[in-house]
Length: 174
Image: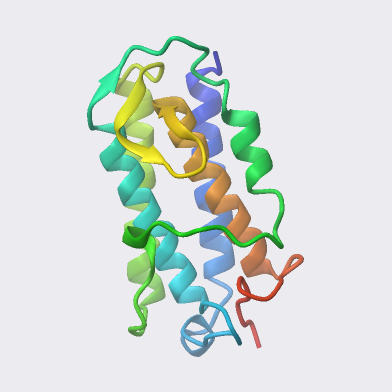
């Protein structure tokens, strides 16, 4: 099993990289939509909404896993390495079209990440979460859900940096 310290480090590193990228946008850039894509502010709101959903799932119904609690982590990480692939977005995580406040969204994301760390420090990460099934992976353990959040954020952080951006997932830095 992955060490608690490693999981916490990965959560913190993911949050730090996202904060650094978000901090590089002016208020105007943060809310400027790319053609056929989301603004950086909408990306940040999407990450926040995903983190909220993950935290609810982590604190929801569980059952004992009949497999390794980290079995799906490589598949999850691989899923998010294709920056050009568009994924179905869970309705609850679709960002609004309202103007976004970078500082407020960044703080809210940080609070959700602190909840991830609290879960890692205080809960058994091996059970399967049954209160929400991932549309692609189905049932995930608490550990896998945390790495889903980390990998999801890593993909969007790279997109916000301008790495291999494609139609449907573009953000605008100009």
